[in-house]
Structures are given as structure tokens and as C-alpha cells.
Image (tube, rainbow, N blue to C red; front, side, top):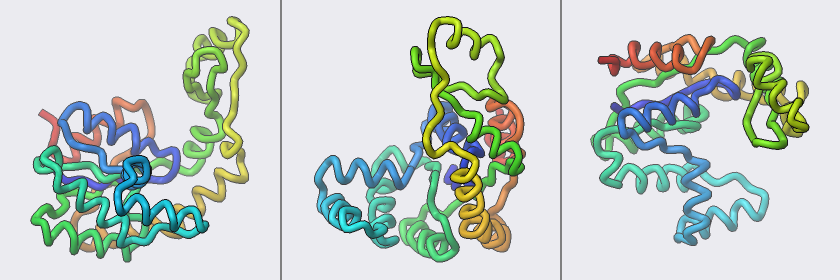
Length: 216
């Protein structure tokens, strides 16, 4: 199964990608991870990317596609993959289609993990880390007993600096403007599937499996 996962920040698409990877052996291809690994390994592409990023510029789509191509050449990707975080716009989607067609690995589905804006804001603005255990909690969604356990043990609930309302609103707006047009693109070529992303992680996962015909 060859899948792209789409969704706004806080939609949980990364979590769903990890579950697909664990249960079906599908490699999670994250362009951010690919870039970091290439730089750490000091590959030729990694050197190019490092120089571009050091100058404060964005890495070109061509370099990202080269990294994806290399990843897809590995034996672990032959039975399928989950692309997470790419493409972000229609131009990238079209280039990706050309690449996947050229290596005879066309997409099966583009799955949108659909979550309403209010829930996205609560998921991100309510996110906290327990200073004692490092456990990620949410002041809106976590059981009160989990929050009390951290606090009663002398821990603090720490909020990431970019999890403020202003930053979150901007991130969601950027997603809406830049990425949502992808939905029409994938709908027009018959690949778009919309999964309700509200509720517990396992509930969302079952919806994804059912919609992609991966459920036993």
C-alpha cells in the first residue's frame, strides 16, 4: 500500500503513520527526517542541503525528491510506504507523481486526517510535558489523574514556546492556504480519502484502515 497522509498541525497524521509502519511494515518517509539523516551521514545531497540551510534558504524540491527516490529504492519500500509531510503544494504533488510513475510505484491513496479547527487549537495549545517524566499531556484531553500524578509528585507542566495561540493560529492558516488546495488535486485524480480525525487515536486508526481496505 502506497499512501500519503495529509492533515493540519495537530491532526495526528504522524501518529497514524507510525501505527501503519508498526503494523504493516510500511516505512514512514518523512522528508524532514530524510534531510536530517542525509546531513548527519554527510552524503553529497546532505552537504548540498546543509549549505543551503546554513544560508537561510529552503531546500529545493529537486533535492527533496532525490532523497525520496533514494528512500524508495531501498528494499523496505518495495511493498509500500507512507509519505508524511510531503507534498505541501500542487507543484510538489505533480513532481512526486512523475517520480512515482517513473519507478512504477504510483500512489494508492491520499488520506486526509480531518480535524476541526477548534480541536486542532486545543490539541496544540493544551499540550504540556511533565518535567519529571517527560510524558506528553494535554490540559484539555488527558485524564485529570495523569495531570495530578505529575503535579503531586513535584513536577511542572511545561509548554513549548511555539504552542501559543498566535503561533498555532498562524500554522493552521498557513496549512489552509498552502496545503488544502492539494485536497482538490487528489480528489480530481480519484485518490483522496477523508478520515474523521476526531476522537481517540485507535478510533481514528480503525477509520483509516477501513477506508483504505487494510482492515482484516
